[in-house]
Length: 134
Image 1 (cartoon, rainbow, N blue to C red):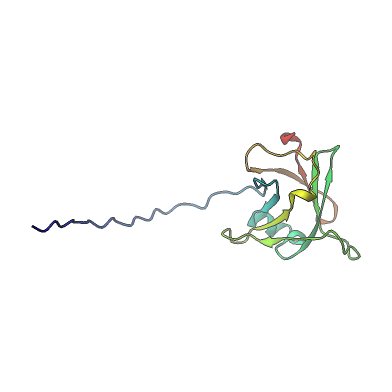
Image 2: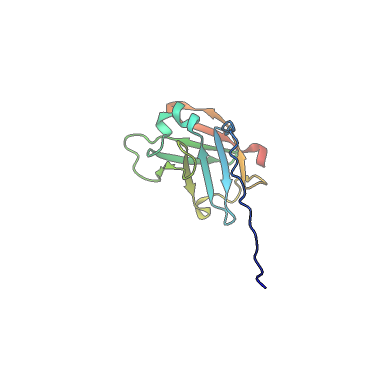
């Protein structure tokens, strides 16, 4: 007596969807407390000074609860961070800051990733408003 199992192939259905909208800048924290700033492709297209491969300065104001991301001056050679290509997100970029380099009083969102409000500053810089996370 032969016991044969019959299988039926499952169909492959592809659903055409529109690309989802992404926030200009997303603030993310890992479980270890490392910070990732993720820039959407649309944001980087409008802000060439902060594009993938560029070097930026990151500064924090505790009194204003703002994080400043700025292109360095020509003579600035220290504390530069690279805007890297975001894997799995074509055209997007990110900047990573280790938890040990972050101020302890810096506000953090309750979720692991949150869109953040920003405003333009001088010389191509942008200021991220972290006050809503305080």
